Amino acid sequence: MQPLILRRADQSDADPRDGGAHHAPRTPRPPGHRPPRRDPAPSRIAYRLHRLWLTPSYRRLLRVGLPMAVVVGALGAYFGNPERRAEVVARYHQIQREIETRPEFMVNMVSIDGASPPLAQAIRQSLGLKLPVSSFDLDLVALRHKVEALDAVANADLEVGTGGALHVTIVQRKGAVVWRSGAGLEMLDPTGHRVAGLVDRDARADLPLIAGQGADAAVPQALALLKAAGPLRPRIRGLVRVGERRWNVVLDRDQVIELPETHPIEALERVLALDNAQKLLERGITVVDMRNEARPTVRLTPEAMEELRKMRQSEAGAKTL
Image (cartoon, rainbow, N blue to C red; front, side, top):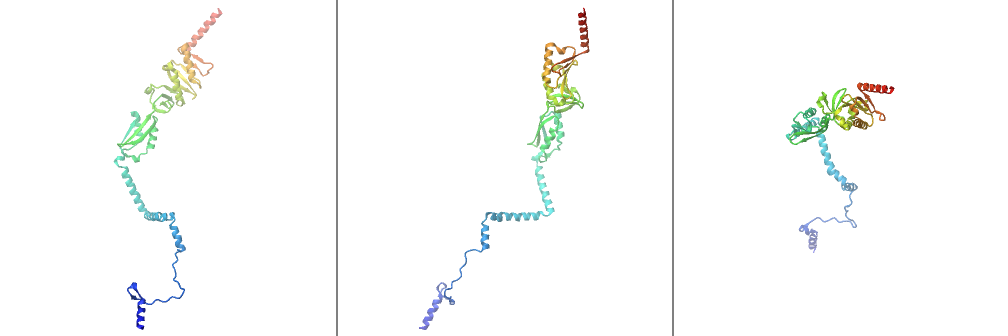
């Protein structure tokens, strides 16, 4: 019976999953011994790294910041060479210039609106443009200041239009008076701003004449006096500024109306009323002094003075009789 027991023992040692193959007998374990189990808790370093990876800013830093740092470092290493930097800059300027000088960006002509022919020529000279020129090379603000620096230009507007044209639109100052000063004759606008110089008075005989130091600063008042003169206007030869404070109205026949410093228009209107009522300015009077509002005075011509003297003598002789 012993062989039968051995055969069964051999069969019990065979593993049916291995097709009945025989293995070495297992080492018996001591009673109460258990195999070591794997600890599911991570290490401290692994735990911290895992928590750090879950931080959005850290993940963003690794996904975005790190590649950017690599790119910046590579660019810094590349452009650290001065020759490479100069080559890149030169290439950039070359491409930029090729774009700026394309035909659609070139200015080939200058059109000027609102100016007389002489003023338009002066504007072209003040601009000093060498055409054709790229529109990118034009400083429109600086060019506008150049145009507005001309005396005859009140304001200007510049823009680059289609068709390669620089459009200049201006408001030209209009002459209102001719000012005779120590420097010569100048044409002024209604505000007293210089418009142009004149060679002689006949160049603008249609404009009224003012004279005297400081007359340019009182052009609005001078125009108001001329407007108030009414029927006396054709006889006015000019207005003279005296002491930069008041006006003298110079008429034909060597007559002068001296106006006060304050309320000159009202004083002139009083003279007009006297002339209308008593024909004051048709008599032998050289000066009508209105500087003292309470006591206007007149100065007679020598002939009128002689006639007045004779009249007084005849009146005195008649009284003695």
